[in-house]
Length: 174
Image 1 (cartoon, rainbow, N blue to C red):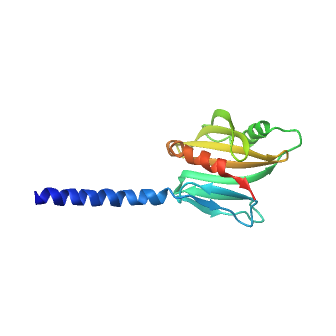
Image 2 (cartoon, rainbow, N blue to C red):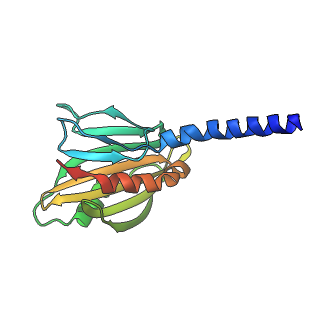
Image 3 (tube, rainbow, N blue to C red):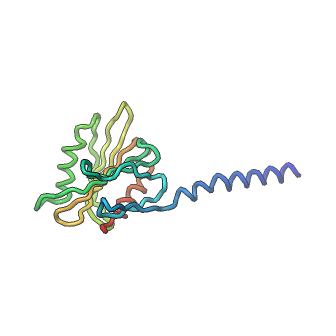
């Protein structure tokens, strides 16, 4: 009987200890900086800042644990007069991602959050590994689009799709 009680006690202790990091990993945090004109929320502390805008590079970069697990680049883009966000997204994809090795075009979808726009998904290969990309084009006014470009291993990026959607929905201007 003592052995059973000891076993159950250890089992309960192990269960509680293994669930504690899970609760800590679900805490949200926000990013903003004097170098950017937006605020974005991250649903997990696994998202870490790796690069901020400077005189040469005008984008902010984050990784989700490891770059292959999830990589995000946020960039503000100027849009020509009369161009829709969907047309801008297609042109951007034609210039930036269509030439990736093994490129397979995905579908485009309307997207609504604090800023609305369109998303484009695609797949490609990198060093023989199946990769995926999902780009959110969020229009703040008739001349400005914020581009959130997520990439990672195909299976891993698919697993954090709910996080990529939450991050894109949270983007707001200061």
